Image (tube, rainbow, N blue to C red; front, side):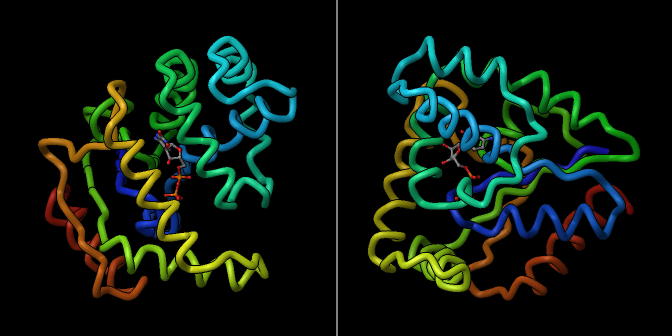
Length: 208
Ligand code: CDP
């Protein structure tokens, strides 16, 4: 079974995907980390993020096992990710890994921007997670505070709005709600309540 979770920046997709995967005994892939890692490695090699050749070569050589890097979670890494994510050949280079992952038995949960539309258009369940930009910024700001990263709330808000605009506006695999996706607005839901609501949606769709 494949569960596709998409949504804008800091919408809580990652937390939800992990909780669902644990609950169902499925594998879980945070696809944003792939783009974040490509951007990190392009910059580490001294290339500009807009350098298509460097970004594509890096994406083709990416070791998906090297995603456990706390620096990948920061604002700068997210921004950089959305720049390399605009390059169609970068997206193409990461596609096979994501699709193979999705086929892991007994099932997989993938979260990102284009899982329900491009990576796994045949996913059994598609959920698009939303929340207002202010609430998303507040939650992400709290996460940063907890990790001791001194980023102002206003900076986080500006960043997620800019990233959403870039992600929704790119011509190739833009962030979009799949025609058959179910919307989950978590603006007024705790993590627990969002998890319960998502389990309800999955049960309604699959009977599991
Ligand atoms: O956790 P957050 O929602 O802030 O971001 P993320 O899911 O880690 O994604 C970082 C960036 O990678 C996004 O802003 C997108 O530009 C890009 N991305 C994408 O293009 N396609 C995906 N399936 C996942 C992420």
